[in-house]
Amino acid sequence: MSADARIVSSGEPNPRREASAAPAGAIGAAGRRRGFAITRPVTGESETVLQTPRPGRLFRWVKVASWAELALFTALLVAWIAPGVEHATSILGLAHGLGFIALALLIWVAILRHEAPYTLLAATLTPVGPVGSVIAIAWIERRPPDRAPELPMHESASERV
Image (cartoon, rainbow, N blue to C red; front, side, top):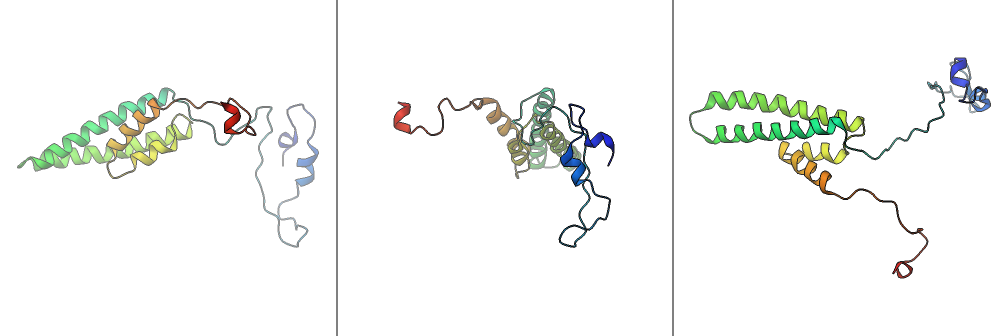
């Protein structure tokens, strides 16, 4: 383990990390080999794993891509229903397939950047595909923002009135 990983933001060594820093392959108290964990430098910022997604620049691209994919899907359905346009159906089918994969990947990246909730990806991966993503985007934009509770949790419902 490098000296950088044992230093906390104040510049002092972290005794807890130094105590756990055993050589690779060391035998633990129970006689089993201890696992090897990769540590990264400790910073003063606290990282949260489950952040509340906030729509950003990428969310706008997801919105545009969802509507474009919905237009492709609609055109594919019209070409599929219309008789005698097999060539257009195959081209629109290929465009829809590639567009849907690109849309799903774009939503996944937006989720990783905390710009979209997981429900958007779940709605997109339903059998209706781009219709589900457009409906989910409308739902996301219309729901009220999360608010912190106004009263402490120990108060009963009768005390709130």
